[in-house]
Figure (cartoon, rainbow, N blue to C red):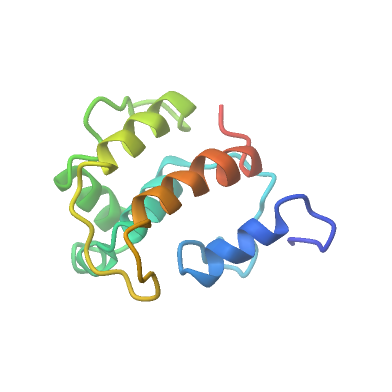
Length: 131
């Protein structure tokens, strides 16, 4: 469902190549749908290298939420409402700056956090119509 003329096609493929995105489970990415809190937490937890912990804690979505909370990513974010706001994503990303990064296969430099923040601010926010 990501067509060749889609504005953010390359960014979606980039995130897919790095294992940050895998679609909605049915092979589709639904790039025009609003992003959900669970999607944000999964991408951030994976980007920080804690996917194995999240899987060990129950997988998607519960294990990712639990792991995000344990890492302190949810501090100051209001996740009690339906959907997620740019304000809450910003708080989660800010908190991520203070999390020790686990070894991430395929990324060989110290730009992990920058790459991950850059993906959200410049790529995923416009793609997923975040409020």
